[in-house]
Length: 322
Image (cartoon, rainbow, N blue to C red):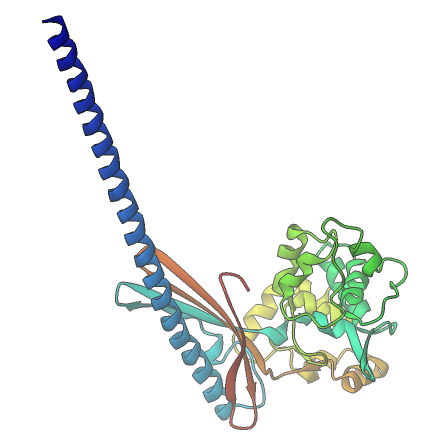
């Protein structure tokens, strides 16, 4: 009887173990199935979001094309392109977007000039490096970063005095790497500069762009800090920020004539000869947000508008971050 009792006890334990293992297996299969289903749904939503975002990009491009055909004299905040696209319902979600004039920002590639087949830092006493130093000071950042960034872009290997940094600085890091020695394609590349850091980048990013060398700044859309950095005066536009914003709701301000009115003849000549400012733009960034269910997809698209017919084409796309 004792032997039979022990056998029944062992059988009961085995049965319990089998049930437990079967339950664990069923739970695992169910959980993995749920994850696969969620992954498939998210992947499908991301694909949908991308296609919808491309439609939003086409909408933005068409807005820029029509604007060029209707008004080729200025690009300012009174125009259709400057009005954000409000949330628009789509199947399973919504999308919205906005256009930004990237020529209203300081082009960090202007810190160098093309000399033959080489890129050299613009060390003119009234050149781009000095203007960028003024912008950094207005944003309460160290002006030394102007020469450091210029060294990152220029093609020589000689550090600018006194704060420049070339390959010897970067090859001594862990892991080691070298300077780009070429124009920047995205402003986020500044995060690769030794010691620059994310906090400085976040503070500077709304005021800078990465465009072809020689692209002028649109004074109609530039922030007051950028305008003050160009003229080098005592924060004239920064102090009148509210009045500037109100005037810009009605017209292009300042236009080239307004901007140059208080400058000396030499300063006006430098602006004209260097083609530093303009009141029209060719480079815009479209930001499209698409929400489908619980999935959000963001597309950043740098658009170039050229020619008399205002033909627009995307030249750079990124997803999730500019």
